Length: 94
Image (cartoon, rainbow, N blue to C red; front, side):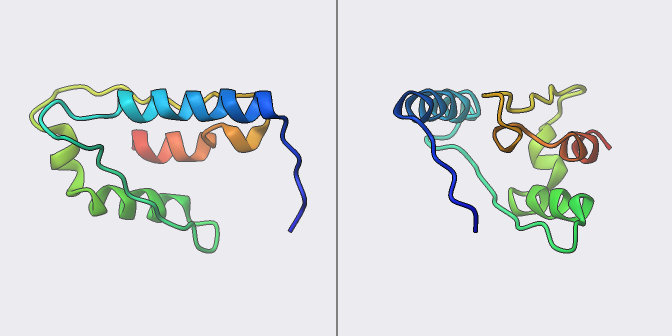
């Protein structure tokens, strides 16, 4: 495992951005955000995304009678590990 150093300023900025993202993801009729975490196995991002959606109640629960939704990737810093992979956005869009 590589040892990656992060400055205090970057840590605070990333933490703040993450907190804002979590707050923005709150559903108006719940007291807490709904989150699912899935490990990508064998590079199968499509399956991981589908599994993550199933864990939060399925696509019907996500859409809740909406005709459109917005996909907003995380773009919180110049480090590629801080951003949403394009493959994940593609899988979500499908």
